[in-house]
Image 1: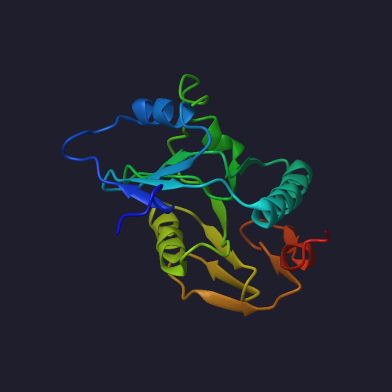
Image 2: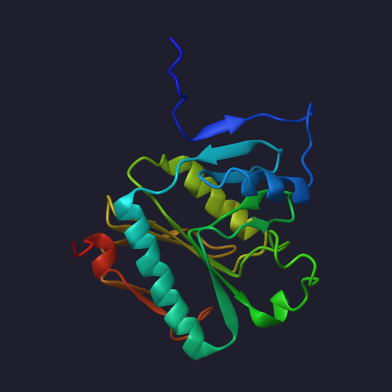
Length: 201
């Protein structure tokens, strides 16, 4: 029996019938602002619903803490979950929070800056919501590393775990940490997790 509307996330297989350029993908996402859309390296579109209340609150807290550190540090810029990045594989991903050095951003042509940025962030955070399957997010974290990310965190409030990803290293699982440090890649950045585990509503 088919369910209407179909449950999200939904994968749309476009190629080889349709091949969207990066600019066409940007326009497609712009006219479907109520949905979160990513593209796999194979050209499939992954359509996700907007975040629920708790996940949105947690995302905002993560981005706030990262942004405050970035202001003090001064070497880079922070991007929230609405920002898209075109990876070397052709995938377009939107991490829940990301940080990129200014010197790398300056290399992006001015005409490209209003659209999806053609680079992989140096640091990415993915926040698992209660409706997310774990395996696709884990695969996405590996995709970031393969694309040049230096550090990634997968935060799971349900299990109170943080998985720390670094190139050429085993994934490190932190069990119910009070905080997690970005050293040495992000010197001085510490994400306090109290309000991530228990949003103070």
